[in-house]
Image 1: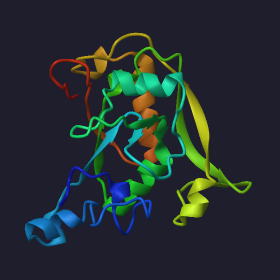
Image 2 (image 1 turned 90 degrees about the vertical axis):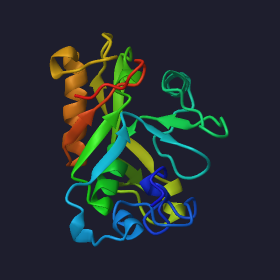
Image 3 (image 1 turned 45 degrees about the horizontal axis):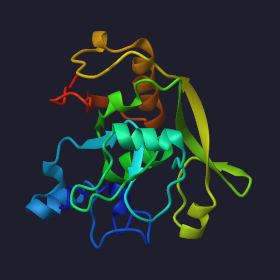
Image 4 (image 1 turned 135 degrees about the vertical axis):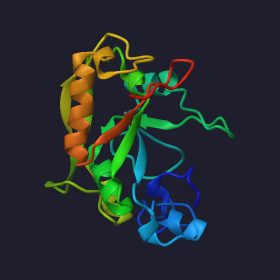
Length: 204
């Protein structure tokens, strides 16, 4: 299994044609290590507290403004090998919910929460508008994907730091509200929570 690839690069369930050459969703792990699917008893999805993408392809919540640059700079969003700048945008709950379903995710690790520190307002994509209709999934056809515009829900941000938090008591109230709202919108619990800017990633 090519674990470093995001699920939306899966050749069957990704944003075709902007995909990789193989299956990368969680079910492929069993095939890759020679186990039956019944041997997998827990699937942990790794999800950033905002959304990123490398290269071309649909990205409804992409920010090409100061907020997008801020996410990229604070999150050190540059390709490990190429150094190419990643595209950044607000958290897309519709995409994450869809991916959790196709991968059978039991819980997620929500990473880089501290990259969101200091924003007055945060946005979460809860669905899309496509040709005047509201939908809660990214359509299969690439032409339809291009026409999707995000529908946002706004949440109040926080100005305290979450860097290095080790328990819920260390988090600002609005950060907790953000995490809980993410759980509700993706229909999947946050099993682990981590911050990025401290010298060592911290998990709750």
